[in-house]
Image (cartoon, rainbow, N blue to C red; front, side, top):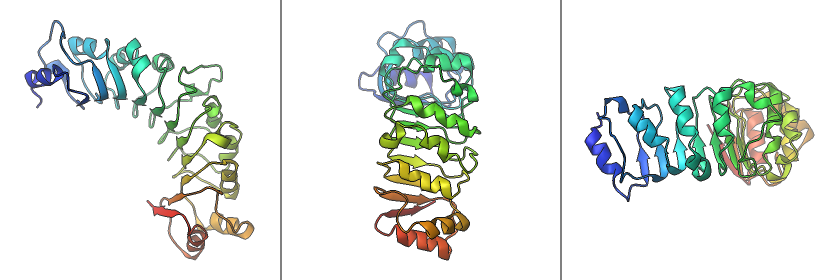
Length: 275
């Protein structure tokens, strides 16, 4: 059990830049009238799964500057909203991890205001609310990495990515996409040049999805789940790697039979990984 006096002692250190306070029950801490002298600038802050007292909620939602903010599996929507509504966080946060939180229209409102986010993790969090083409996200030009894994989404959701002109890494593992979903991703023209890494493991793919990967001119890393039938269809048409600039191919939950082995040999000059 974390002692509130010890916690307060560390928070008063001007050298404290990394703070992990996962699953802390701040309601058991002594209420403080003010937090004068407490550190308010962090390179890394993890407050996932916390229960906040009113005084500590005021602290975490007022004048903090954080580069990496981790707030997974929030237990209190109101507390999450207040923290995400902090104007100083809008300006300072570069990595925002909200996995395991249910996004509502109210919760999306402050998220859209973050200015400098280049890495956004919304795995296990999404609803179809993100489909609104008229929505504007202040960090649209900054975003480099987006993780939407472990969500149940329609293929048409992928058109949402059109707003992110500089997205380099897209992680969409276990999103229950049916085969053919790559046609939607191909239609997102900015990604044709910007995308360098993609993880679509756990989704159904067919030969057209694999061929569609060629559209992404600078794609260097692919993580994918395949079966022998799809690979066999591909090898009947192509005798070259999935992408011209491919450096890493990760095969997830794939049984290596003769057909898969041929695929591996086709990519023998790159790094092959197995999950």
